[in-house]
Amino acid sequence: MRPHAGPAPLQSLIPFTVTLMSLGLIAGIGREMLLSRLLGTGPDIEYFRLAFAVPNLLATSLGVTLVSSMAALASGGGTDLRAAATVLRRLTTLALLVAIAVAGLGLASSPWIVPLLSPGYAESARIQVQNLMPGLWGYFAVVAAGFGLRSFLAVRGRTWVAASSSLVLSGAMALGLLITPCIAGRPPSGQDLVVLALISAVTLAVHHLLALRPTEWRGFWSGGRLVEPSARLSEGLLLFTAVLAHAVASAPRLVDRSIATEVGPGTVAAMDYSFAILTVPGVIFGTGLVTALVPAAAASPSPLNEATRKAALAWITGATLIGMVTGLVIARFAAPLVDVVYGGGRFDADSAQLTTALLSWHALALGPMIASILLMQWLLARNLALLVLLVAVARIAAKLAAVEWMVPRWGLDGLAASFLIPEITSALLLTCIVTARLSERFAR
Image (cartoon, rainbow, N blue to C red; front, side, top):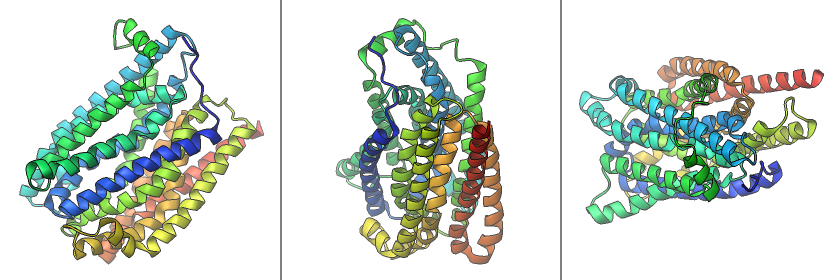
């Protein structure tokens, strides 16, 4: 077997990764523009956004976490075909088990999740949300099943697979949004959006499978069984801790959506439109850099050598500062930005006003948000999931306290401003932890 390429130098990976993710962002913004013009902030998009909240949050944010945690496992195998095939089967097994377990748990708990997510909805609206959940948990299962394969490919130098995942998902969804009105003769319904999400997930799975080399395909199937016994309990516990940490860390977004159902109609959809704009710099300076940093972190010796430490900290610091400046600019020009990106069709003046009010506050959290993403994934790649879990608990506690104090006093503005509190809290705590651990390692 041809030796697999190890992780490329960090400096060479980042521009290529950012380019692919930028293309994915163009497709993502195109998808959001189509949704805003076709559905505005009406009931169909509100119900879909709320039903999609948990599965999509896990499929995107948790995907980065699992790929980070699996990176150390994926680096095994070397140049030997049989050993590499064992690694691939192990990762596939772990990812498949996580996908089935989480999707099954999510589907079974949907009758309890929906009321928690929609305290401001009438019972008829909750039934609409509930009816969309099975298909969307199917979306999560298909996407999550590919996390192991994505990690295997990233460690073997094919980071373009993970970097282009957003392009594939968003592109497939945007294409479906263009075609559906032509076929159905009407804007897409909530169920139509579920079908399009499932199609995009299957397209992503095919994209991942096509990235395997023929020798890897043959080695995988030559083992004779998919469930690899070497997927040991210790590895499962490591992934479970990472899953739990990111689930808790992501909880503030769910709190936002839950409170938004009580603020007024259209607030849930407007909040997601605001988040979509923040996704552009967040992916470029956060997730894009994570895709390049994680293989480097997993493959680096422990303790880190001085060159790796300096390179990583320089990129993290630079991305955070750029994020802070970008956030200030977005907040200052929120109104015209919303009008340019979303204006037209069913996205009316009320929709624009809601989205602008939220974006003006959300943008101020961009710098801390990017710092949290980078530092959290770095710690996970170094097998320090327990520390990330502790930070995640502090993060949700800060969010709940902020909502309890700010929303009753300032309503929509209080909800929007409360977005800053958990981001700042986690960024400060993670910075202290990483600084302390690096000082401890180099003091030895």
